[in-house]
Image (cartoon, rainbow over all chains, first blue to last red; front, side, top):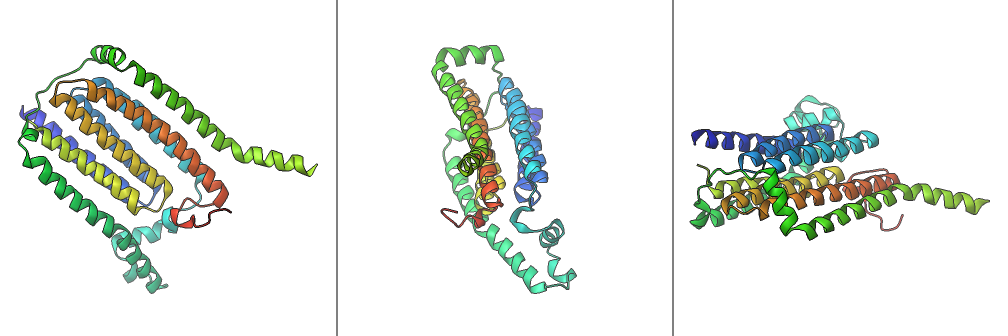
Length: 203
Length: 100
């Protein structure tokens, strides 16, 4: 059972660290690749908590499909760095060496630095307060100290359960995916169609 | 042994990281990534609950969350591309015009 605990805590550390790195990056590609690592960790955690089918789906859907979709969009747009900084500037700001090393417009950079800090300070503070409150709530009841017994739900068992009890939500979800497909196609095509209308109007 | 509260704390920390990312970042794609992190954290909590009560309902719900996340990302990224085409920026601060 020590092995179980060790794996759980190691995975938690990996997931939390990679997510923290992902949300603080200013380069979008780095953020997405860190997030893929986080989702791989989550997949192994799902397996550890007894959901092998969900672990496979986590790798296929989250780490595979969704993150690759993000990468595609980032690489096709490729307009500018987030928050309008170049890589060197944001690196300098992250290091805190921006003011010391750049003689050019030190005041502008330090103002940017301060804006960056202020942008993160309040959300982080509020998040920490929420986390402390959640910790108190979670550990104030004895119910949450329940020790988890390792168990495994085989994919066959899960599939039977899903289509016996939740066949209607599965149908609704498939319909939702269809609507999302239509919506994405419509949004992607609209510009071209407007262009076409404009051309016809000119004739 | 791992207690159920520890799984909840892990899920809560991940959820708050996603929320902070969605609030603090100004880039639309990073905001969408924050929403993804939050959905994933909810999934971890549900899988833990599924193991805690030995019921498969939690795992079924995670499956629905995954499908929902895929649909949300498809529409969200299409919207971002659409907005970027019209305004030439993915910075949320730049969207200050109602009809342009």
